[in-house]
Amino acid sequence: MSSINKSPSTQIYRMMLYQRALHPELLTIQDRRTITQPDYELEAWLMPGGHAIRFEVAGRCAVELVTDQDLQLPERGLLHTLPCIGEKEYEHNVDDKIRFVAAVQTENLSDNLYSATFNEMYDFGLESEAMMHQWQAHEDALPNLSIVDLQRYRKEIHAQTYHLLGSVGFILRTQSIFEIA
Image (cartoon, rainbow, N blue to C red):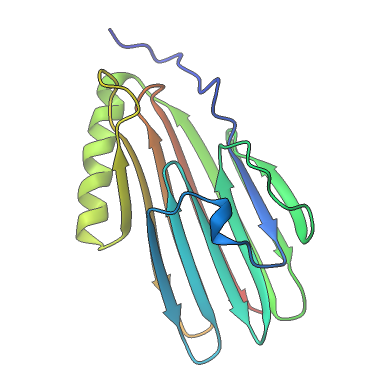
């Protein structure tokens, strides 16, 4: 039986922007990737249903954290929290070195549409060599999937992320740009 009116009642996603690095022990990291360019360094962490991306330029950093967990996260250095519901866009000059731009989109899908989207996203993750983590929440639930796909440029990074939750047919897409200001 499928229902299109599913809602992630226990998952309240939010995107948080920090002006400081976060400690990895706060998170359940499943995969990690570092990109070093002459002008910046980026480190991405993938968690079940979430991610963190740290962009550092000349000793200054910005961190995007997307999570549905009620973690004891630090308030120091927190610049903004954005609920991930519907479609939203956000821009912020972190300081005189880093500019951050993000778009968020959420969808609730029927089981059939979720399964088709899951398969398409899984294939995309394999083809693009993206960071991926798949897990099963319950034995009879549809599978979950988190993907972080990064494109590097000389002065910026583009990050597309996807978090798919099978038990509620929920999909969260984010697109972020970290750029040297």
